[in-house]
Amino acid sequence: MTLRPRQEQLLQLLKDRRSMPPKEIRESVRGSKHGTMDLLNALLEAGLGPRSGTQKAGRYTSA
Image 1 (cartoon, rainbow, N blue to C red):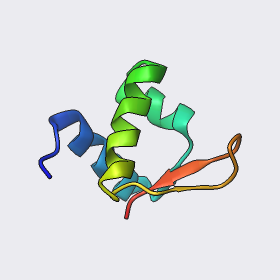
Image 2: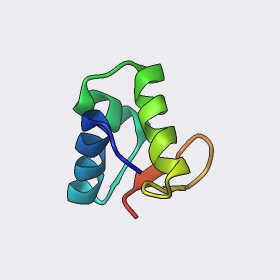
Image 3: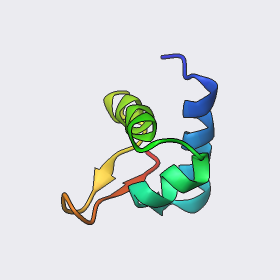
């Protein structure tokens, strides 16, 4: 799978910080809520950014 530049940026951010909630990710990549979720969902489908936690208090990590 080939990652787009924003996806690579997000993956590197997750590797550097280990675990982040969606709001922190959105602020770090300076994206909209919907745009950030599109990036996260693409990483989830590729198995590169698993999600942990509850629906409300979930966090994303790097694989």
